[in-house]
Amino acid sequence: MVSTQLVSSPLLLTLAYSFLFLLQPNPSIARSLKKCNFLKIYQFGDSISDTGNLIRQKPIGAATVYARLPYGETFFKHPTGRCSNGRLMIDFIAHASGLPFLSPYEKKDGDFKQGVNFAVAGATALPTEVLAKMNIANPDTNSSLKVQLDWLSGYFNTCIKARDCSEKLKTSLFIVGEIGGDDYNYAFLERKTIEEVISMVPEVVGAIITAVKASFPRSWIKLS
Image 1 (tube, rainbow, N blue to C red):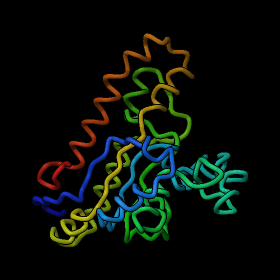
Image 2: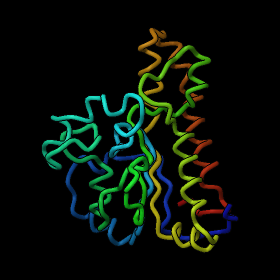
Image 3: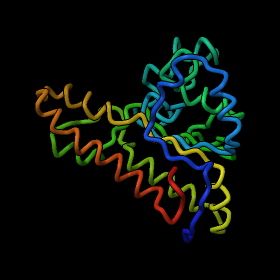
Image 4: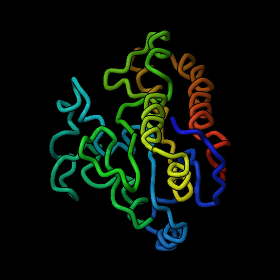
């Protein structure tokens, strides 16, 4: 287990995902990202960001539509597990930062030297067991935000020395989200009323806030 220590760096950002700035091509944004000198990116979320985790999960991953064409046909020319025929926003962010596309965490031979993508299509902000108590099932994956954050902890526990982790964090970009939409989607699929779904909002938002605070404590990083 790696002991935590203070890492203060203006280059380390924790984002509650805001991606409107990516809707229009903007060279100045790409230049700004490169100026940040990010050396690693860590992504959490759902289908908006998954670059291949769900299709590697058993028992249904390989059977999902994302594992076959037309998904991936435009840019990669083959299915990658992205819920798109081309690239995702995280791909553009990585490219604009001068970094390679992020390997999904579930890829056994993935290259994680410059970051990891923990996002899983269909993932929820609330843990599966919490949704189950509301009689809401997740038919796709159990890899909620909490599970993804557990993966992060395991990843950083591979750092032999605390200093190694500190160095990784100094020039890293953490992107949390988009996530939470599927909590509501699954609720509606269970025929929950709009009032019942609205009542979930504080808990979903709270889960995201709690996860960010728990995963990136002040003893690790400086939030900017």
